[in-house]
Image (tube, rainbow, N blue to C red; front, top):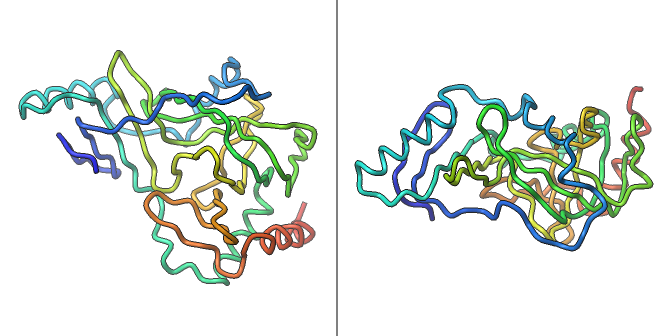
Amino acid sequence: MLSGYSVWRPGGAIFLASVSLIAQSTQTPPATADLTSPALRAHASLLRYFRAGPSLAQDLADARTGAAQKNIVWKGLSFFVNDAENLGGLTPAFARETYSKLTCKADAVVIGQTQQSVSHISDWGTVYTDYVFAITAILKDNARSLIRQKATLILTRPGGSAMLGGDPVSSSYRGFPELKQGAIYLQFLHYIPESSAYETYDAYSTLIATGQEWVVARQGSAVALPGLNRGVLETTINEWLRSCRN
């Protein structure tokens, strides 16, 4: 549990002076995708990472001052964004409608695991993470840039931990939890031509394999897709693809 100096502000952000930091990068065996490519700098200006309000530097200064006034040891600043609705009422009909639409809208649908990750601070002062995602199955290939011959792709998502001027900064999003190594994910993806990478389509677009179920990835919750177990969903996606309008 996090404890320490906190300040609430509109938009669901919580500032904490005492935080548990997430590793800024994960060390794993070499991957074919390159997290150091200059083209990935384009992710810093993605609209998904926009936030209004004071600059990050100002937020850090205010939080440090507040921590000092309360005699709290300064350990950094953390944002939590409640950007996704409760999934308690997820019905079979809603699940099929949601994921049939996602199947058609997404540029690619893949299954795989994360290998490496590096976090950055966006142009608007939010933290995002670029992941190397190792592909084990392609359910829908990207017609604009085929991925069928690739072993990995770059996936960018909100959230992560980074440093700014020596200060730890982290962001976590209810709808976009951190991807864990060793977990199997099914991802509905949007293509980013500027970097030849991908972003998760929306807050419903990351599913994690749990036993025989596909579970919607949410911070602090685990809701399985009703009627769309592992194997069933993959087959159903193939059927939905045949009905998508070009």
